[in-house]
Amino acid sequence: MNSPSLNTPSLATAALAALALIAPVVRADPLLSSWLTTNSTKYARIYTSTANRTAGISTTTWTGQISPTYAGIHEINYSATWVYLKNTGLGGYVMGPWNNPNLPKNQGTATKVFRFPRTPVIPNTKTLTGVGVIGVLVDGVSIYNTSDGFSYSTANGKDATPNGGIGPGDRIWNRDAWPNEFVSFDYALNHAQPSGDYHSHANPIAVRYQLGDNVNYNPSTKVYSENTATTTFTHSPIIGWMSDGLPYYGPYGYSSPLDATSAVRRMVSGYVLRDGSYGTTNLSSTGRTTLPAWALAAQNRAQLNSSTQYGPAVNTAYALGHFSEDYDYLGDLGFTPGATSTVGAYTTLFDLNEYNVRFCVTPEFPSGTWAYFATITSTGAPWYPYNAGRWYYGAKTAAASTTTVMAADTPLTQYYRGSASTAETWTAAPVTPSGTNVTITWNAVEGGTYQVSATSDLTNWTTLTPTVTATGGNTATFTEIGATATEFKRFYKITRTGLATYDAVGY
Image (cartoon, rainbow, N blue to C red; front, side):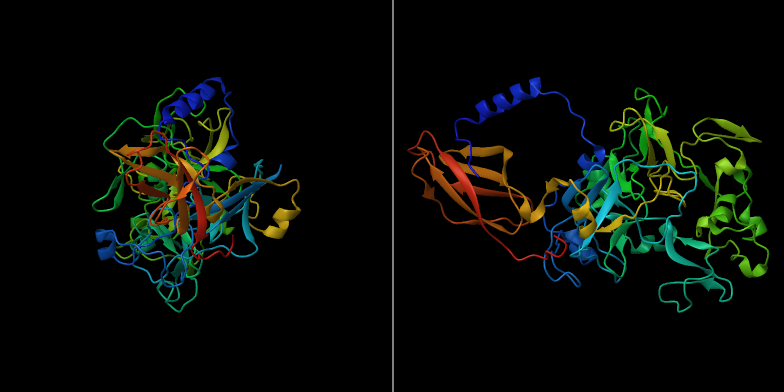
């Protein structure tokens, strides 16, 4: 990798600016261009304890992850029909710690890829989202639905739990992952399965922060929080893609769905607690003896008809919101999504349908698209159904695919290849003189060893010492002492001469 000389960076900048003035605007396919690949040259890291998080001490190896591996997406390929993703599933921020024995690990395998349809289909018959991956965040972290996989067991008079020994439960009153598992989430609001699949059930706040989506980060406490101090928002970016090929946005969209000049505000979920308001059944009074209309459809039931199907009374241990079925959808109660509507004594405005989507224009889709939105309250707390409703809105196509399927999908084009395969480039300001010393900075692959060479005539190159090993991030630096003491011009080149061993499964 050759460097600009010490005395020419301003000319290079001017030339690039001139090219930008005449370059046509080309709108890339969002399903290709929205993936967050800037961290793919960095090792995935975790905090192993709260004390280490406070002190800022992270590690690149841990139980289940015995060698370092790179964060997030490392390869994107596409055909006319599909986009294929290779990915470790590990966030580009420091993950953890967790009140949970399950630790994340590289999710790559020799044959596994994810695929997304480039042209989503909106069917009349919808497919239920299941337990496990229902989409992928743009940083490669898995998206899961509202359920934690367990439900109430009437015969046992308690919830089924991971270590409860009573199976998954009755599958009637299904536990909502957010209130039941948030104690096991890290500060990014994610946690891992026993398989090591690190995933998001609700409001993926860390990747939203990386994308600039109205999130604050306190570097002292290392806590993310919604920026509730402002009333001026920008439209949320795409934060993920669901397995039906529809985009998943952060919480903020245009107030008028088809008007990109309208004010941006928080998108309001169509789901409310069944507390007697808006015409809902007051479960605190009636007990959990009925299901809302959406749940009856999801479970293919007419209605509960036996006390053996009832849930527990609403109390401290089983507060409203403990189960997904504690929520009702306003559209089933006579209200209309996307418009201010009145039913009885209640007037409300909500934006999203029962699938948690709406048709709208967005910065990436100026002609409009069906899109999911992350749902939060005005205080920034996650709110049901968090990412997707009980069904996919589009036709669900298998997110899990194989490299054999990908290879057979021709012609196939590689859009991106990162991590250890990333070609080094200079940073925006690669040369920093200080007295007679010169510091050069380049975008590096963590674990890479680099040899720096210099010349004043572009003919006779001098190998400089020592070599540089990139650690702790995705840039590396080298300072030549006395570089300009006797030279007016100085040129540099960088060569990667080695790469530390890493967990390359799935690459």
